[in-house]
Length: 161
Image (tube, rainbow, N blue to C red; front, side):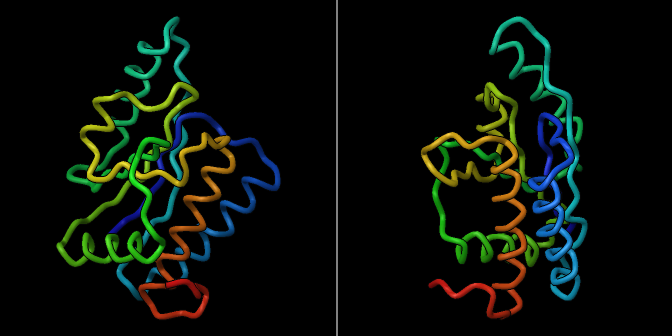
């Protein structure tokens, strides 16, 4: 199963981008034996539309165009469901075992995701009820993907329940 992140907005060069890349590289290495590959990032331009609703709709169209066919869609949103790292890893493993060929985690633009995109998602996931800067959200996504590969492989990186 190919795993990717689709993010609205570009992350500038710097320590945040390097940290996210480091976690994705680790996930790529540890995911190979698990049938998990890719761990790539697609950055989409932010909409310049005049209203928040129009920006979300335009960005949703760009996100939908970037999605592989029949991909598992995880939308990151502060109103989403909070799950443990173990549950997150197990869901990835279940989707992989069901023969799903792609999983995409989506980070919306500054105005968030369109309601239609959230409704279409297989999972709307929240790391917190708080709003996080995109740089930190991307690092959190990358780290949790790496953590998921270590959980699925039985590696001791994850020491939680």
